[in-house]
Amino acid sequence: MDRLIAFLGIFILLLISYSLSNDRKKVDPKIIIWGLSLQFIFAILILRTPIGKPIFGFLDSAISKLIVFLMLEETFYLNLLYQMLDSIQQ
Image (cartoon, rainbow, N blue to C red):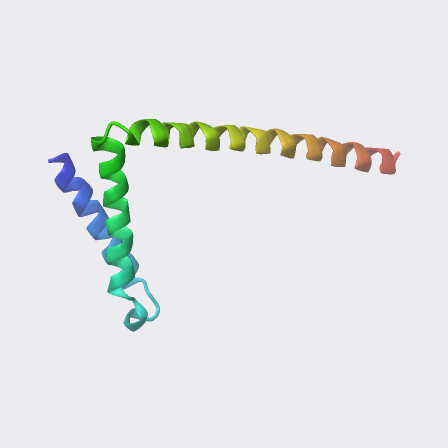
C-alpha cells in the first residue's frame, strides 16, 4: 500500500507541474521519463544492493560535513562584518 501511495504521489506531482506549466507544448516526455528512470535507478541502487548503502552513506556524511563547514565559515564572516561595522560606527 505504501508503494502505491508513493507512485500516486509522484504521478500527482507530475500532473500538478504539467497543469501549472505556461507552455505545455514544450514539455518533453523524454526528459520526464529520463528523470523518473534516474530516480528509480538510484532507489534500487540504494535500497536493494549491498554496495549502494555505503556509497550513498559516505556521500551523505561528506555533504553534511561540507554544509557544517560552510555554516561555520558564514558565521565567521558575518562576525567579521559585524565587527567592521561596529568599529566604523564608533
